[in-house]
Image 1 (cartoon, rainbow, N blue to C red):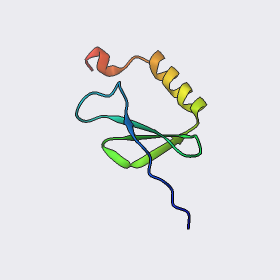
Image 2: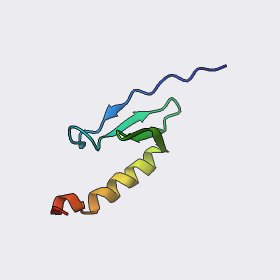
Image 3: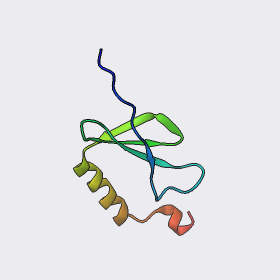
Image 4: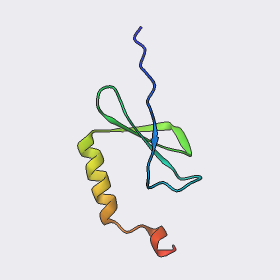
Length: 69
């Protein structure tokens, strides 16, 4: 049986204090793991390229919260 070491999670610097926090970790295989504080058992896996595309898209898309919606 091979033991998989636990991920070292880092809170995104863009996450506010309290809820709605995004956590990021790098897996031993080099892929990126993402999880949200309200659902810590749901973990998304992405390559560095996929994460870069996601971040780029999010930066180009206005947030409804920025407009007070």
